[in-house]
Length: 231
Image 1: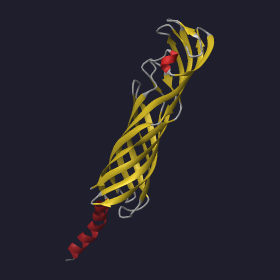
Image 2 (image 1 turned 135 degrees about the vertical axis):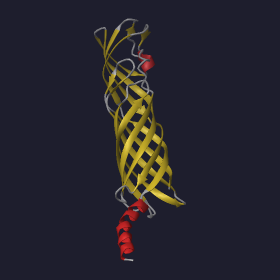
Image 3 (image 1 turned 120 degrees about the vertical axis):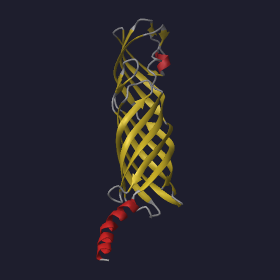
Image 4 (image 1 turned 30 degrees about the vertical axis):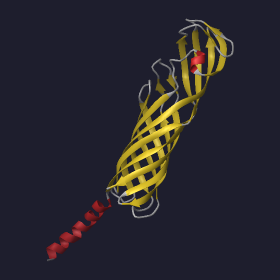
């Protein structure tokens, strides 16, 4: 009997930890708002003759040198998370997330020179004759995250914060490192299901597109509704 009691006393703490752990998966649907993005520099040859909206004549073969800066409008965002709560502590959790974000161009400014002559235009890339440098991109994020839950899984409202690191894969551009910081909450619905909301700030470090144009960091703010299930 004493041996059984000792064994029970030894197992209780570990059983409690195992009971606190829970696998979960959740889906996020919302909108993303990339901030202004700019190039470090560009140095390209005009592919054909055109006249800029400001009345500047450009001919095929002209050298265009300068920088671009783009302003984005909001786009669709979505993602999926697979993770575990109660890793070593009931407040800690880890997860892997995939996020999709549309980055749609609203306006763009080119500042530089055409064959050495100063020039500045604000318009679409097509109008500027730089359609190959497409600022309308799809952004894919793959992140590993550490989550901190402020309350236990039985509370009616469960706020949390989260930090993550991984990679960003931007359409027609090189892959780059990415980081994220999030804050959100979950509301249990019963039977393991829940809904909630999340704000996520994303930073993708400088990257290069298929034309060899180098860009500064891309920053985005993402607001999403969450729908999930916990096992």
